[in-house]
Image 1 (cartoon, rainbow, N blue to C red):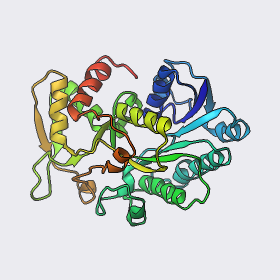
Image 2 (image 1 turned 90 degrees about the horizontal axis):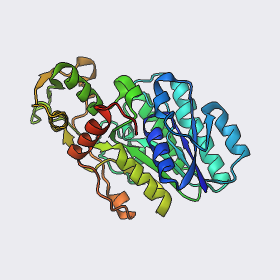
Image 3 (image 1 turned 90 degrees about the vertical axis):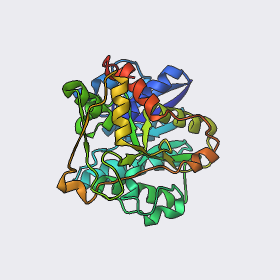
Length: 323
């Protein structure tokens, strides 16, 4: 059987991908991460991988054992958007990714890696994944900059893996994010706030023409990410950086009401001021331009916000299950 590497396999998206491909039985899954973090243990203890390698050992192992590796799915990163330690971000998000790219290039191994919609900054240049727009982007935090730096480095490379895809994830939600605490999705926090208090607080709008709670985001269910990565590995369309959102902007009010509905509760929504320290940089709208992925041949329908929240809440959050 073919083998794939999934880095970040103890984390949110990486664990979902590792489980998905293990269940598909199309690949032997080689998992890479720091497996010592207790809070993440439930993400990887429920299945048996082909092999499990610590993140600090992986590059040496990969360079010595590239044979039989059919693809690398590189999801591992420091994903905390409030991280201010530039050295950590440089090591984990940039240099580590560069070394994986170089080994994949040297041994002709396809690579799919995680970029981020955080590279778009405040959205002043839109949300197009056209390569020519990359130099215009100005991320708003060091995490987004580290992802952007790798995207720019990739575009400057003369030598590449035989197929590669960088995926700009928008607002991902779904099972296996229990460990993320305050970095977990809005759906996760909405569920727990409603469960605890019976109500949901949303930020007031501080922008004329936008109603309270109608600040909008492109929310994407993690199961759609699994489907897209499967498609990319199976069909290997043009190598490129691809947006990966739902292609729709949904207001937080709609997310909250869908969560109440999934919990079979009447909506009880109140509003609080957006904190002063984030108000000036607070985004009121994000929406992925999904044209490039669709033109590549991807035709599967995405979960609607209501469908995704219902599946997540009823099949994972309420029973406390992992994917």
